[in-house]
Length: 254
Ligand code: MN
Image 1 (tube, rainbow, N blue to C red):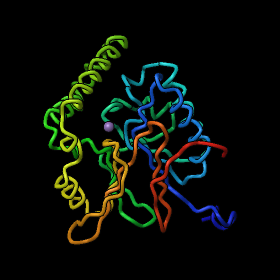
Image 2 (cartoon, rainbow, N blue to C red; image 1 turned 90 degrees about the vertical axis):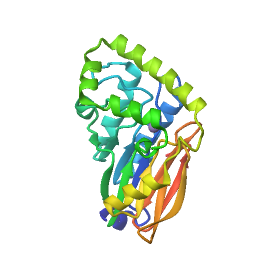
Image 3 (cartoon, protein in one colour; image 1 turned 180 degrees about the vertical axis):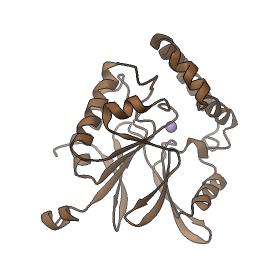
Image 4 (spheres, rainbow, N blue to C red; image 1 turned 30 degrees about the vertical axis):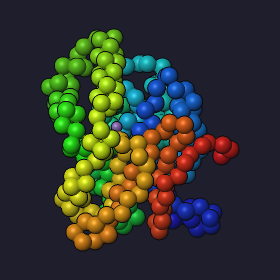
């Protein structure tokens, strides 16, 4: 409120991103995200990162310089007073308390219900809603078990990295062979999740199909907002009190 009255033009906004898949093999995207964190995100009420911030995360004890640099940039954002919430994606589900301590970000559950300027909004990464992809759901259930994670995290870093590489290769094979419709969210799963939480708005990522879909939940008009992946450019959902929009982020002068 203060900012609105002081500056006159600047509306309060909460920003949502997902599926950045940051990886040392794509330094331009990491640079763009760094620019976003030190620019547009600094003016936000809060930043939500709804999964797959990193292409791979093999444990909080990994001191990889590339991922460490991103963590440092997140730390600068939170130190500047912008709350940053991070949800696990299917690539970086091993982000843990060490990541929180390093960055000042707070991990949130999938799904999470938030109050967004008076509106109840459900947040999810989105992979759990792709219920038709049975082999994937089986894999997801396995790797999300605490016992599986404890065992994995006890392995040497080099072994974990090699296993993550082969998992990614397996994932590429699977997505190459699976129909696009099966890899999208299941409409009935979306409606059930929204009904269960009594919301008319769902924000998720994962499918890399940015769009705002209208639907009906409990006979009320509802919205499913899909965040875009950061491939050639950034994708941001800007949510202000009275409006929201999916925007491209290309950097440029701040
Ligand atoms: Mn994903």
